[in-house]
Image (tube, rainbow, N blue to C red; front, side, top):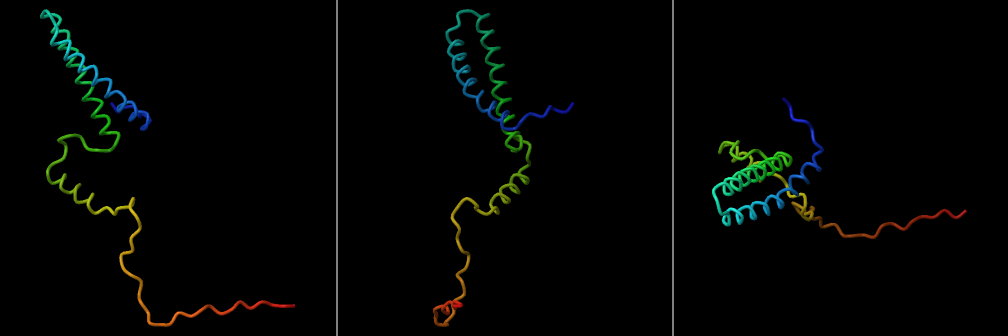
Length: 121
């Protein structure tokens, strides 16, 4: 079944915004796990840790897909090398303009342009 289309910027913002929330939740759950008194409480916290970790992984995967990056481990070493080569061949379009070669030099003297002729009439 195809996935429903989601507006790209909104989905990316949501994937990025949820990561700090999940990070804080994971840290708090880790503290709670260390302070748990009985086995039932530890099991509940362990299940919450697993679900929160899965949510983190999903958010990271969605972010990669939205940005157009391949999934982790989906490229063979040859494909990765080809991508690196393609990226190296791209011109730097964000830097200053640099002339590749100097304009041709001529030994002709520089002369002033002829005066403008005005019609008086």
